[in-house]
Amino acid sequence: MKNIWKFIRHNKGMFIGGAIALAVLIWTYGCQSQVTSIVNPTVLVTRAELKLEVDNYLAIAEIKFANLDRQDSIKKTLFNTAIDFMQGGNVNPAAVALVIGNILGLGAIIDNACKRTHINTLKSNADA
Image (cartoon, rainbow, N blue to C red):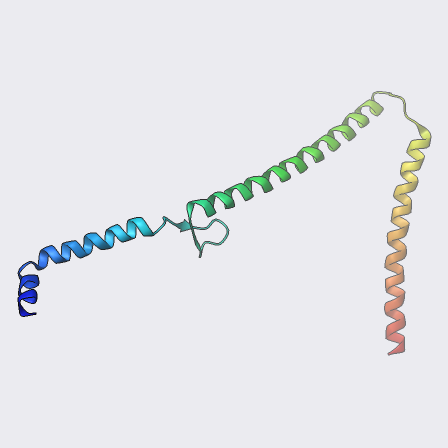
């Protein structure tokens, strides 16, 4: 046993270098590269997990862009209809009356709901 320790002490640089080389080999082969997550910066993720996060963000962005495109097309249609009307285009009076009636009806429904809530609040306070 003394001969082994004597050999190790005599060649300690070689043993330390070998241990460091072994640790580096294990680390480079066994540990995957990781970065902080986009979603949760306190978590480390691998390349595959990061790709999934990015793909998820891109999918959400596509949905939001499609929603913006839909809203812009509706605005454009309404604007073009208003321009046609202002330029003296044909207007259907029955359709205009129907739209105005629907808007007034919606206002009446909201007004009734507010009044009903107020009356119920007053009744509950009177009973208490």
